[in-house]
Amino acid sequence: MSLDSTDVNAVVPDEGTGAARAIATESAPSTRAGRRGAASGDRGESGESSRRRDWRLGGRTVHPWRSHVLAVALLGIGLGVILGGVLSIVLPATWGGYAATGMLWLGMLVPIVWAFTRSRPAGLLRIRWLDLLWGVGLGLLLRMMQGWLAVAAGGSGTLPSYPSIGGSLPSGFVFADVLAPVVIAPVIEEFFFHGVVLVSVYTLLRRPVGRLMAGVVAAVVSTALFVLMHSLTGALPVDTVISLSLLGLVCGGLVMLTGRIWPAVLVHVVYNGSFVVLALAGTYLG
Image 1 (tube, rainbow, N blue to C red):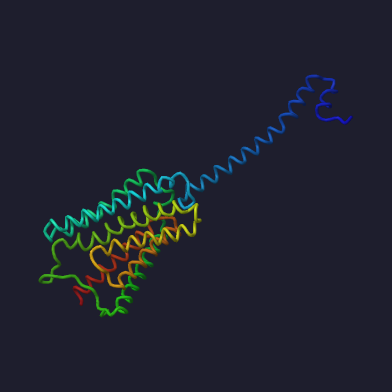
Image 2 (tube, one colour; image 1 turned 90 degrees about the horizontal axis):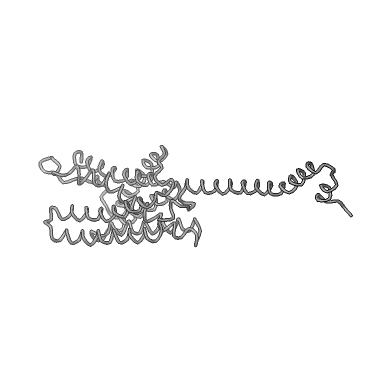
């Protein structure tokens, strides 16, 4: 008969020593299992930690940004469009446009605030110095492409300009033509279209179709809504539709590639701001 660990412990003359050895023998497998469990737990915590640093990988911070957030976003902008249209009709022309724009912004701002009170997708609000480079470089490139497209569509190629009275710009110019398009609109629009809408669509599709296809669809859907919103005031020329589509796709692509919203915001700021600079040059130098 061969001697296993139980047999060895049984023939040891010292009962105390034998009991100690038996306990050691029995506890060894559980100790190894414990080490394996601890290692597995460390890997699980490491995986969860990596997920929390990047919303594109899923995780708790982005889970609430699914169908409910997308539905509220679409409802908000829909109500903003409807109420803005009503205000533009009932109010005098001088204030109707401002009221309609403000109501549209409010319709986008409410879903933004509501979404971020639910959770903050990991890394989405992070900012890097590289984001400034993306913003300036791509914003100016897109503005140049917009000019080329306008000329190709039959435009004169001259600098744009603002209406002036006696060499002076109209009252309200700073807010309506500088702050609104350069600061307020880019922040609200990017946080809505390429923040709330893009992240929600991506989160809904990431598991069913995979990360790559989900990112492509999210960028296209958010860009389509972005262009549609800008067409509410009337039919847009083909070159303007293409320019807005390029702007939307570039901003959406940056959010998907970097995982951050600020590169898209800065591109939009530079794109709109460069028009203001060109229009001022056309007004005073043209």
